[in-house]
Image 1 (cartoon, rainbow, N blue to C red):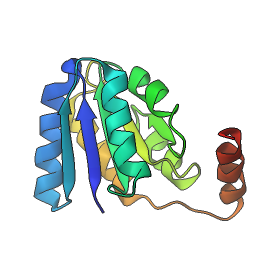
Image 2: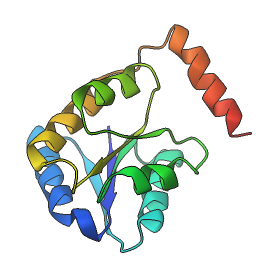
Image 3: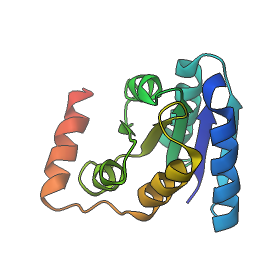
Length: 141
């Protein structure tokens, strides 16, 4: 598992906390740095995923919303802005999300680390949810 991670200017401290946490857990990551314009960073992280260089990504900005909007413009990306454990868990279980977006101005680092763990440790459930993921993929065409 390789995690691609990036942020904008609003989330540098949160990104550093998550990087330390991933390192502590022994999870490999590619830190794509910080770009002032969140769409540029969203594209960089998502291209790592769509190329197969990373299995999933984490994008951070002030709210997580801008990053998720930009990321979801890229074919093959299912990004979710999460600020609670239930959403982080079920976006993996039911939507097979491959990018977790969080807002540094919305949640603290403790919750962000918890959401990161939930997102990374929760597998896609498949089954009846696969049909819905396939329908989402079809929208890209």
